[in-house]
Image (cartoon, helix red, strand yellow):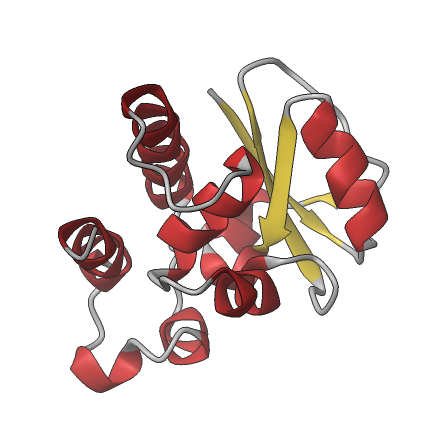
Length: 139
């Protein structure tokens, strides 16, 4: 799995085009570390294989898991690229995006916990994984 962070903005149309090529991009504020993004990707893949997916679109399913939200519009609002200043990207093959590369933006931060409303439950980066797990239990 190839996971990269980038500084810069990206339109939703560009994000959709990249997704059609197997490169999935997200607002980096939804990513609590490389492991979080990889876990969400692998879980989405598993859900699609087992017919347990909520979204009809793989990219959106990853957003649901990253955000811990059940509503697609909420996950898209939080994890989509429309309002992003930094981008997190994942693919099964190597890729290059026309933005400034900076993998440090993938790290868990208190601001990211606050962005997803997880800060009220504590300050542990494990909260990213727990919100995804709760989404699974609600299925």
